[in-house]
Length: 263
Image (cartoon, rainbow, N blue to C red; front, side, top):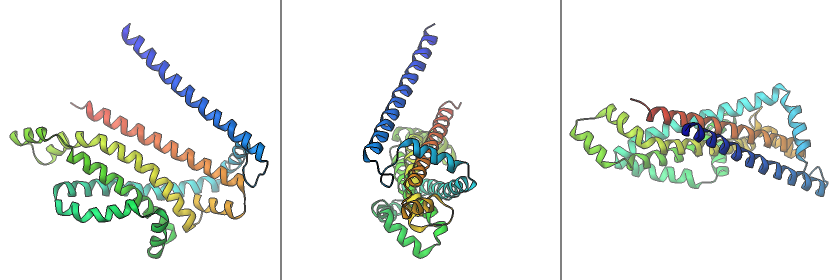
């Protein structure tokens, strides 16, 4: 009885949360529509209904989905590479202080230098087709590295001492201690890095203008003063970003639950 009541309360709480979120979204859509009516200049601002209609027109074209797939694939490649490389570098830096000191200036520069500066520099070295891959990697790598390294350094020393007493070393030490301790930091890192990579990758495409990408369509909309297209592509970017974040958050949550429930 108590368990059923708790589940009912939990379900009701989720419904209320979603109702509040939906109400907030509707509120800002109404504000947006009223602002568009008040300005009454399509070149400056169009309403959400017109944007939704234009997005619907784009969504039935193959070029729309091809552009999203191409941009998403390249940015995902850079993001995944950053996650893998960040974990490896963090493990090396945690083990060797010299490596940590050598990496500090490079990672610091990655975090400090504006995206536009990186884009211009990278364009000198690689084709614009691979620009978003490199920029996504550059944006995500410091986040993953810093969080994973901090997770390793915050590992409970008493657990490590116990493992030393019972001769738990190598992969068993990583599996039994470090993964559990680092997983919350890793979860936060991949979620935060995902949004940064996606936004920075699209910004890089706007500057580099690789063919058949979201960035190229945004640039064309700006050049031709096509405000409905500009807003429609922006909405598409937001939808993809929110969807990706939800998928990654769900996947990481499932991973954490399964790891914690392991025998």
